[in-house]
Image (cartoon, rainbow, N blue to C red; front, side, top):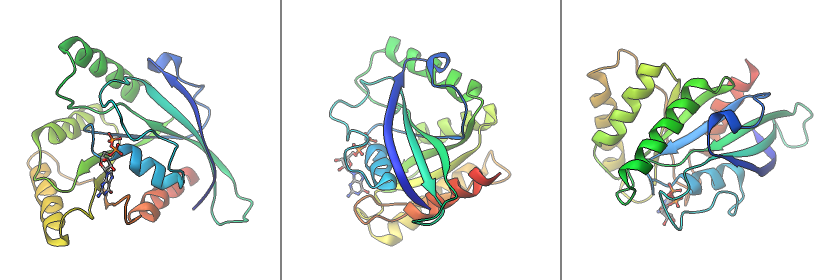
Length: 207
Ligand code: GDP
């Protein structure tokens, strides 16, 4: 998939104020500092698109980007879709009130956004399975929201550690999940995982 246009559109405080749900939408979320902005910039090949966080946890908004993609460069089979950058969870310095606001906004968005096709949940590949990520994954399961796991920053640890952390996370999921979701290992530095993520989006756009 080739991205021919990627532009910031709007930030919304709640799902009701989001742009009209007139095209497929893919959302990205994860613990703050997981590498979400870097991943979005890598996917769109635009280092300035999503801000790499100066003040994590502060921007509690639903950020829409307009994407136009073609299957191959120069091709004519355009598709238009939204990429959504959701505010991260697990930032220690937010107040309980802010955290509740975040929870409400995220729950409403994930459960009500009718054009939302897939959520990409980002997990830091350097760490063993973290309760906060497993809880979020299980919550999406309860809400029946489809998701793919993206293990980020894979260049920071050796491959064996990354593979073990991925395996341990999936094994931890087996306690509650009968079927495991798709997963991608990525690095914004090495530009890996891009084709796989865009491939998943491309396939879903066809449906
Ligand atoms: P966000 O808060 O989830 O949007 O995370 P950012 O994209 O701002 O990244 C947080 C920090 O991790 C920054 O210092 C990035 O440079 C770094 N980072 C993000 N992705 C990668 C990666 O794939 N590899 C490495 N080595 N560092 C990364």
